Length: 181
Image 1 (cartoon, rainbow, N blue to C red):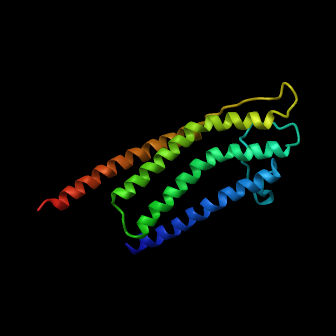
Image 2 (image 1 turned 120 degrees about the horizontal axis):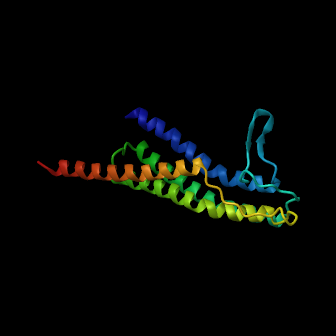
Image 3 (image 1 turned 120 degrees about the vertical axis):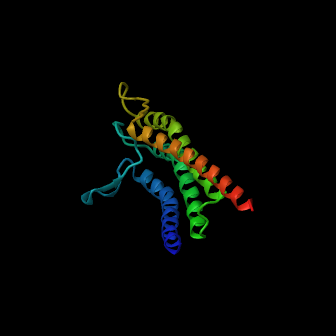
């Protein structure tokens, strides 16, 4: 059990770190947008602008601020998943492996992933509109993309929800067995 608690501590710490870093990175990105953050020479860059958007103008402060606000939509769901992961691994740290609390957090993670992907087309439409509005006529667009990654996350979310349901049934059976003399 000690290994599970130790590994859980590290994962909880990692998820907390990412939870805090993402909003900061998002803000830093939009200050310098559309230039990606990172170290291009090392091959590490991060951009919060969806692929395929052709920006043919200098981004105004209003466009950058709007882009930041629009990016808060998917960030909200990512932060929600991270929050529930922190809570889940906190329970694992306390050696609570098969409890109804765990099931609740796993289910919430699944629903947050699912809702995040269902809202993603709205994000894409708003972002493409915002970033191409300053382009010359004929180069403005509203785009919605759904690719294999989105479908994979939706399937993963549905599997997570299913697993939480199976675990909930397992917790009920365990409680019944503990009450049986």
